[in-house]
Image 1 (tube, rainbow, N blue to C red):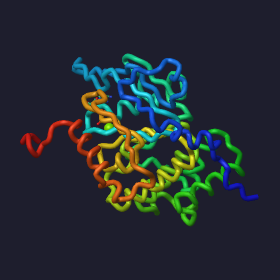
Image 2 (image 1 turned 30 degrees about the vertical axis):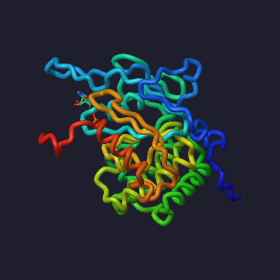
Image 3 (image 1 turned 120 degrees about the vertical axis):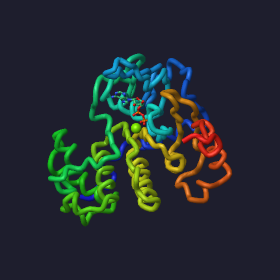
Image 4 (image 1 turned 90 degrees about the vertical axis):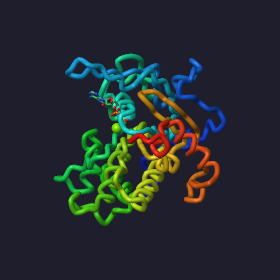
Length: 294
Ligand code: ADP
Ligand code: MG
C-alpha cells in the first residue's frame, strides 16, 4: 500500500513556523515567561569559557540569550573564531555551558539525544555501509522494524533523487551526492532539531544551490527546526527565516529575512535583500578593504 504521508508530522507542526509572522524576537530577548515552553531551542544567558593548558581563558560564548520557534530555520553567521560552533555544540549537548541554561523542546540539555540531529562539514557517512544502509543506520539504532526502515529509506532516497544509488558505496558517489545522503540520513531520524555546522563549505555555487534546495524541501516536509551555522552571508539569505550575527561570542545583530520562498536569484539580489546584506556586513564589523587590515 502506498502511503506517501508516512513519517510526516501533523500539519499544525509542519506549518508552525508560519504561525507567528508578525512578532519579532531579539537575540537578547526579554521573553514573556509564559511563552518559554513553546520554543524549540532556548538559550538563557549562556556563557562558555574554555581554559587552555596555559591557564589562559577563552570566552567563546558570552551571555547569549535567544529563542527559536518550532519549525524555524535560523542561520548563525559570522567569521571564524566567533563562537558559532560553540553555540551549536552547546545545543547538541556535546559541551556544557559555564553559565546559563540551554533548553531544547523546553527541557534542559544534559547531553546529546536523538531529538537533535547534527551535520558537520566533514563527510560523516560510514564507508563500509552502502548508501541505503547509511540512511537506515539511525533507524536501526533506534530499533525501528525492518519493513518500516525500508519504507523510510526508499522515501528519503526518492526525496534526494538518488534511488538508483541505493546499493552504491559512499566512495562511488561524488562529493555533492555524499552530502545529499548525509542530509537524508539525519532527516530520516526525524529529529525535532537539526544542527548544521557549515555543512556546504567548499562546494561550488551550483552544487551548493542544489543542496540548499534538497535541504529546504526536506525541512518543509519534516517541519523540524534548523540551526544552521555559516560564515557565508549569501547562504544565510538563501536559507534563513532569521539570521543571528555572532561576534566575539555575542549576538551582534539579528533580523528576520522577509523574502518569500522559494527564493529566486532575483529575490536574493533585490533591494530588500541587499539592504539586509549591508546591515549584516556592517554588523560583522571591520571592512578589510577600507581599514587596510588583513
Ligand atoms: P566559530 O565556529 O565561530 O569559528 P568556535 O565556536 O569554534 O568559533 O570558537 C570560538 C572561540 O573559542 C575561538 O577562540 C576558539 O579558539 C575557542 N575554542 C573553541 N573550542 C575550544 C576548545 N575546545 N578549547 C579551547 N578553545 C576553544
Ligand atoms: Mg565553527
